[in-house]
Length: 116
Image 1 (cartoon, rainbow, N blue to C red):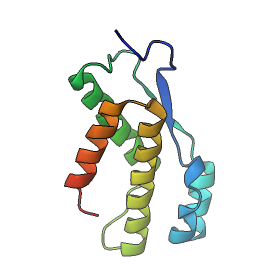
Image 2 (cartoon, helix red, strand yellow):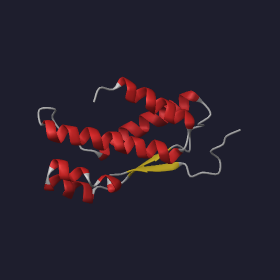
Image 3 (cartoon, rainbow, N blue to C red):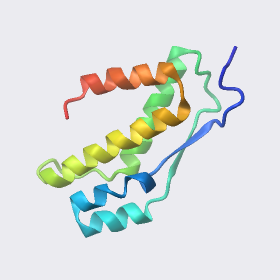
């Protein structure tokens, strides 16, 4: 049985809740965060009781987070760290919104494999 049937099948990855990161990257970062539109991630075509589909959703969330949080050159350490925090927070918020234990498990495994 698909336990997701009574839920919305679209999440929005956005910087709206991440405006605090603008302070870490300066005024330009704040303006960018304030102007950023949300990126909708649909999972209507996925069955979240299937591991392969949960992994597909996680990849979509990662891609949306990377698009919402503008990457910068690692040589600009402060701005790069702000990007990493933005990216991680965007993924965390999207995963929480879906409310799938399987997605949470995939996120935890991915975070354990990433070096901050």
